[in-house]
Picture 1 (cartoon, rainbow, N blue to C red):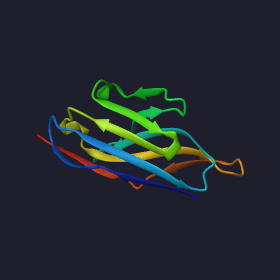
Picture 2 (cartoon, rainbow, N blue to C red):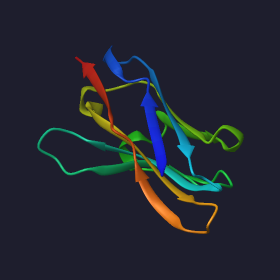
Picture 3 (tube, helix red, strand yellow):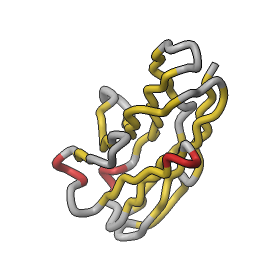
Length: 120
């Protein structure tokens, strides 16, 4: 099994910054793609940013230039640096990790979510 632990959410004023972290642990041979998703009240979950094992990144248009996704493969950890936050960034943020076990099985794993609230 794979466990994902997220941290770093909270309440911040518009224009402020937060840094989210996601640590993967458990029966992991290799962590492959990693991503941050978010879900605002009454809306569907959307992908915010992705990072490949090689460090290639993608972002949803609404966060480009404000958010930076990164990872530390040695620590099986992913980060999301969020700057110039806006009220519309308010959501529960979820960590998503695709991993390969020692037996060669791939799995798609989700964290429990961390609340980010941006006040105006």
